[in-house]
Length: 175
Image (cartoon, rainbow, N blue to C red; front, side, top):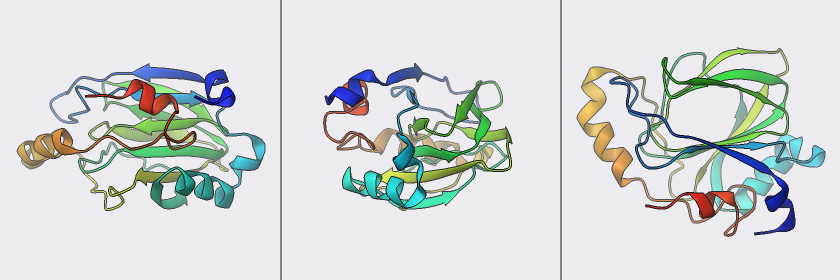
């Protein structure tokens, strides 16, 4: 792992199925504190960094203010400006404060919801190669059997969104 990757604090959060939001029984949410330097907090540069590391389908926006998750894809959220309180793991999960420079890697199935952000809050979101056609699920009862199967079939990313093949994600996620 590169020197910069070793200096970054990475926190892990594992969430249990709450009956509505399935979460991910195997893979922890990863929070990289202040992982983006000031030049990488430019949306275009951040998109390029993600693309170089095999993460595509990039977009720039905020985070929805309702609990949702993706059953076909893992997701990286790179905070490029502002700050927010994001609930992860569903209504009974954990609210985490994020700010410009932070990156969150969300395993397939893990719920997320913007509980409040400042006016300038913006993220670059992206997905591992081959998972760019993400779905948007909200925890409806009728979703359950299909999404549980989907989540179990999502393959691990080939690389860390910021640091490539030898980043924290590839060290911490395995089946």
